[in-house]
Length: 366
Ligand code: FES
Image (cartoon, rainbow, N blue to C red; front, side):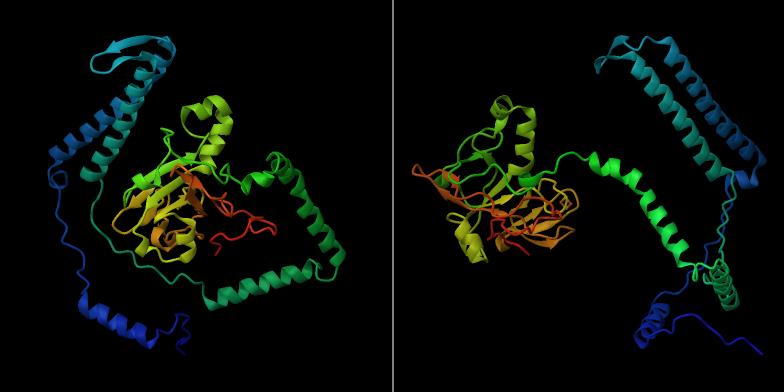
């Protein structure tokens, strides 16, 4: 009797319709006729191509030997002057050139060999179904359950438990040094930036304060807090502090048409259409610095997360899961833009204790 068993999923009605449509629209073009190459029909051309391949591989071999010779024979500090380039280290130059020729010879030789001498007929390889036969699957299942029963682990639970404990704890000596070696916990440093109420927004890296009245619509500024900007910050704070500040305090400031701003909170935390947002991407922390003036979208160059500046920097595309945090701003007595407060939520990517109770509220949590 014929085997009527068929494991393939039954196509839905829509699937059948789509299938019928696709076979109607796209006929199988089949394989194009094989066109013999010159080396296929002319033995002399084949010999020539073969010789060229040998020459390329030999060139590669010679370059490899030259690399070794250069490595031992040339003084690593030897400098020379090359026209159009200037002074450079000749040891590195020799190693780079010989290795480059060596790789190039292998690459070109292989391509030439494949294109001119290897068989180039296209073939269709019919695939059998991926799943095993039903009988084989049943047999494997029986073998496994027989093994489980004959191991007696189902009855000797103490052995099972102790073996599980031994294997589980065996991971500890491997994992513990790694976890313990991660250094001190960042504690408050993930929650707070250096922004404080009254701190001026300074253009990065010039350190120029920004007068609100001078900001024209569509303007974009990259800003840092007063005292943490430019080379002075490196001198006064030291390189490490300055780099940490640069990593978490960076802010992008944009002046929007106030009528475009969709959220009341965003309007309240801005000043006359000027809004300031953390530049640290909420995905994995790259600087979000590409502002598209026509669409008012902010783009992260790393993985293309896109934030809508007119809608409180909500994510409209990409892997980021949270909006960019907004920095509340206002102006001081002289009309310069200042922070009205610090960030009301942690900037940057999420972390396990991000929503810990007690954190300043009011951010654009979502
Ligand atoms: S870091 Fe911005 S999208 Fe990944």
